[in-house]
Amino acid sequence: MKDNFNRRHFIKNTAALAALVGLPGGNIFSKASHDELIGAAATPQPAVGKPVFGLKVPPIKQVRVGTIGLGNRGEEHVRLINAVGQEKAKIVAICDVRAEIAEKSKAFLKENGGQQPAVYTGKPDAWKELCQRDDIDLVTIATPWEDHVPMAIYALQQGKHVAMEVPAAYTIEDCWKLVNTAEEMQRNCMMLENVCYGEEELWLLNMAESGVFGTLTYAECAYIHDLRELLFSKTYYYNMWRIRHNEARDGNLYPTHGLGPVAQYMGIDHGDRFDYLVSMSSLQAGLDEYSRTVEADNEFYNKTGYRHGDMNNTLIKTNRGRSILLQHDVVTGRPYNRINMLAGTKAFHKGYPSQLSVGGHGHGFLKEEEYKEFKERYAHPLWKKLEAEAAKNGGHGGMDFVMLWRLIDCLNKGVPLDMDVYDGASWSVVTPLSELSVQLGSVPVKFPDFTRGYWKNERKLGVIANP
Image 1 (cartoon, rainbow, N blue to C red):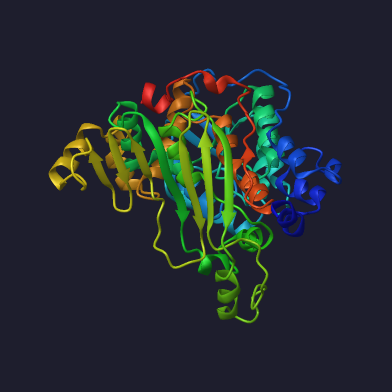
Image 2: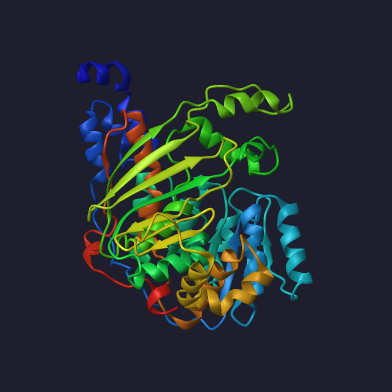
């Protein structure tokens, strides 16, 4: 019966599926079996350069920055890097295909500190000219997801360090391209996962590293955020790029906000690794129904047939036997939640609101005074150091400012960044692997090992070893 079910529901055009999830040489899979397709997803690629674990580069007294993409996130990059201070970083050039958007950021910089960056705009590949400049150390990228990898690779090839918005990549092949290019060029390629710098997340990381949780066993995390109004907005996302992904793909399209901090708590690629996942999506109804409520001249008015289910649940098993439940829902009225649940043999935490249980006594969480004691005792040094500036400059409660300050500070000092290209690849590859699992009937799918075995070496995160 199982075989009949599989044949009836899950026989797909494997070449198209391979191309969708971005397997290298996807066109060779036209007659491949599902097992061969899953095996190919986990197959490592040969190295073309040296590993970049703990990559150190000479200190850069004043980091010269070029920013590509000046919309919702890129505008924040400009504002917050400017807030870090010109003694630490200078914005040399900015780029956006929309001239009015680029000029808006230029005017802001002039009025707030007097920086006068060069502006690149007016044509789709203007960003290449920015990357070619010889007076830029770091390129930040805040563009639609599909542009992250080609822009990052080109910038790396020009000898620049790269920091890109999340997710770093959304195909398997592109994850490998980032790893291989960073190794070949010996440059930093960091995904800007701001949630790893949240006050609560840094606190939990500090407690996990200090042994408060004992042996970590499982976690739950998510990106639950009702984006319907923004998805259907004709102006919020350039060319409505984000809803187009929901129209075409079914899986966890945005895993890293919830998963990144959990991966750090568990030492993923620092002594443990993601082994395999199983993914399943609910039916899709939210986008179909919401499309009837938008203006008639909207491209997506009354459109149906979106592929992305309203809720995607992905279960991840690690090499050490830990499990992680990861959720993605951007179309229901559930209040914003990243869950941020962490369980160990000695303590348990759940977020939204943050509650902590330590010692396993009784069935409740710590009282307010006990909770405050743990909050103060294990507050992360980096957050304590920057708390006032984070409150002043903001950015998702200050985490954006802390992240960019820390990135610049590491380059100033010539110390390794807190997150590397392997983190970006391992966290981002959940998207294509979850798509593959969903399409093949929620089958287990193995993770590729972007570290090529180096994950077995336990090593301290920079934000712990050198806060």
